Length: 372
Image 1 (tube, rainbow, N blue to C red):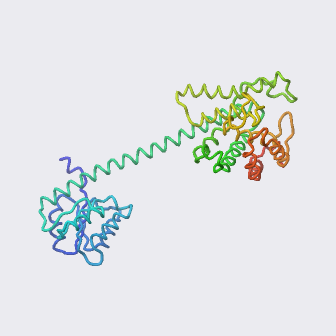
Image 2: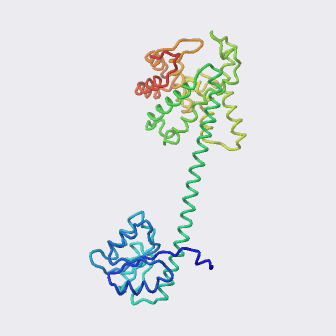
Image 3: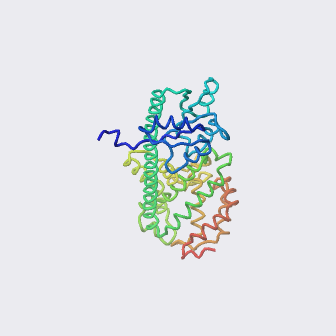
């Protein structure tokens, strides 16, 4: 069987109010194509929207009620029919008529009386072009769907990896996954509050940056994996020597993420922010923090956001060496740290949304905290 007989016939919709014209065109095309016919624009629109739409439309212009121009305009305005090629088949021979047809989106313009060979050649050409367009359209749709699926998979893998890594630190520090969730959400709502602030809008310029902050926040204490148990889990006050070792968790965290990045062989945006947060979240606005003693705007914005989130959560959480504080007491301490420990503008924003911090703390409270 020849190849062309294996391919299902394409459908041509003929639209003309003159029965003799429909009969003539149908007899010309029926051996090569499936032919549908409509004697007015309204009928043509209904047929074009059926479950088996035509592959091409041959459209007369001069028709009662709805002329060919309006029919074409409506076809091109509807997403379901706008990609169907339209050829005007008309007795109008003026250049202006032809130009108007093309302006409305027609792919060709054939004047009557017709030449059968010309009609067949042009119909065949435009149907071949449509097949090519449909092929690439389907390919592009498949590729877009595949890219979206792979992107979703990669994002899920990233999140699982982050949570797995951060859980190691949380487990060793005798904390819970709720601490991860709370600090993530604190950072996110504080960033959203500051996104239009003149000092921060250049950084918090879109949802993508805030989402990266949200994803990266759980890795802020990943370096605690490298702190010995007798220091990390000590119930009493640390000695100067022990505290010096504890402070290295910031550098250890950054280095661990650096090592992971090198193994991947690519710099990922969320890891860049994760390194900033891990390394700088213990810095203080007045320069008395660690590991570098950075001050003011030299501290990355991500680290400054994390500082407020981490300190607030530490204050309201019960630890091996302390009891949990109330929201009001934690809030008071954050306010007292304005301009010394914390960025002043960030503290002001925190005060405005302190109720949201409390709501997060209550929703994801640890049973042992007794949060109030």
